Picture 1 (cartoon, rainbow, N blue to C red):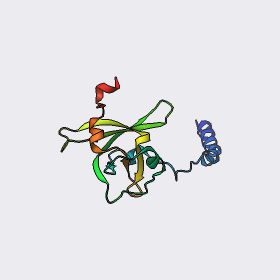
Picture 2: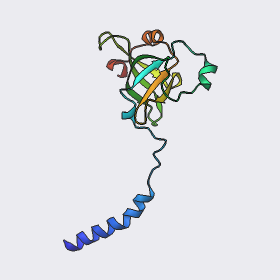
Picture 3: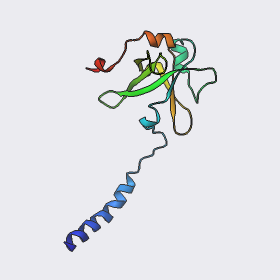
Picture 4: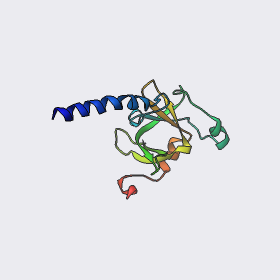
Length: 139
């Protein structure tokens, strides 16, 4: 048994440098738990394709309207983000609706150094008119 323990210890020490070399640069990575539960904002008016295509956010704008909450993040099978499930409308979880905001209609913006919000070019009314994505929608 001591020989097995010595061998396991030697292999562990030999593997340590290899594990250290696989260190990932996390500076540009965002965890989903830092996004889900975050707020969803609208710019209080629709934005055309050209303006939206060149628009960037670096924090929450003072004139943005908080219209909902990020319920979930949707990925395709290759791992690419497709959009988010947003809880919009209602009051105190009564009469709210879950809709899928596609990636092309949203921007992720930092709230602070640990959490994020989403801003969408859609109005609150446009989101409330979208198809609901309740549990039955996924089946």
